[in-house]
Length: 165
Image 1: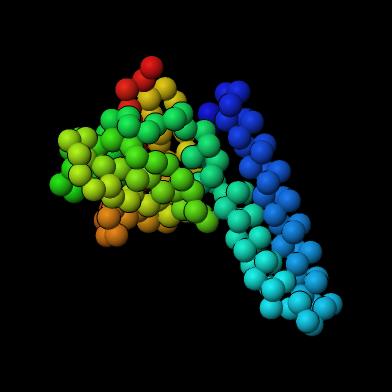
Image 2: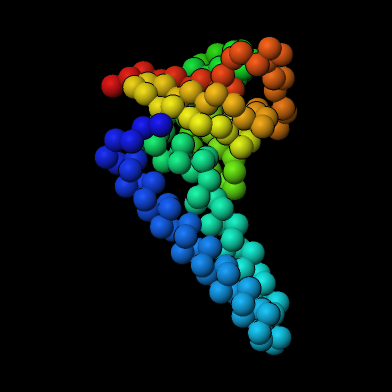
């Protein structure tokens, strides 16, 4: 995982944010237990705070935060050793995390609708010059369809490469 200047700052800020949100969620649970009149509102605040805390503290958030800005960058994508079905030239629209998932919105380089590449519960990621490699994931889906896993499990779950520089 990239630990260069900017990603360390992002990691610390997401860790601090996640910790504060977790504390807010626990405090809201305490309010829900102690003040019956505020129970429904406190439970909603607790659930939302704890979900956002989980997102901030997830591996997917650390991976997304360690990537350089990739918007409009052409990329090559390999999922378990294979190119994405029907796609050759793609560019990044956005990279986000949501819960324990890494979400990459990609669109064809020649234009067209963006599609979602979802990496559910990514394992450790390595970011290097022009490359992201995620060794394992619970599953990966492309435009809502789960992609078949490497039968021998010898290929990384995801390799995303872009022009270094």
